[in-house]
Image 1 (cartoon, helix red, strand yellow):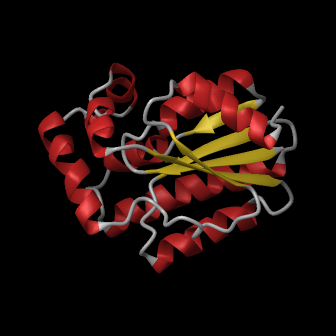
Image 2 (cartoon, rainbow, N blue to C red):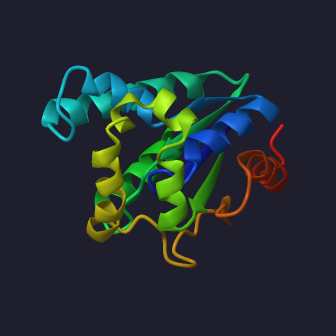
Image 3 (cartoon, rainbow, N blue to C red):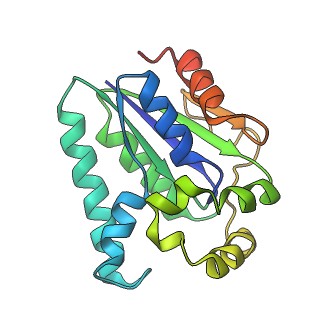
Length: 185
């Protein structure tokens, strides 16, 4: 059983690549908005209740999934590389899957490309909180100013790490690259 942990800025294509990877491997996708959208039905984003519920959903899902050995999991995540808590979270997830292969994939692309992907039909269909296009259009560049959403070259030293600039690559091509690089079944 494998965990493919896809990291990248908002609208870089994590969920879409994850969907494609799930189609060609024995994996299931838990994209970050599954828990976010549920938590948002009860709490405002960023409040203590939201944060606790969002974290609990993810960790319980991962812990339960890690107990079984039949399929792999793909998880997507936006990471602020300047926040120590984010590094701790990466380690927490790695610890949950300590008895399994953990593959880290970082997707990167330009803000311009991400702005285009931000309004894609698939993204808007699966992420209701992203349907306020005025807000999300402002959020993408603003979050880049507040957070470091791309790792520095060589900063991620995980044993199983792959960085892909998916600027001009179709999601299916990226998924195939990930599958082949890590030899995922």
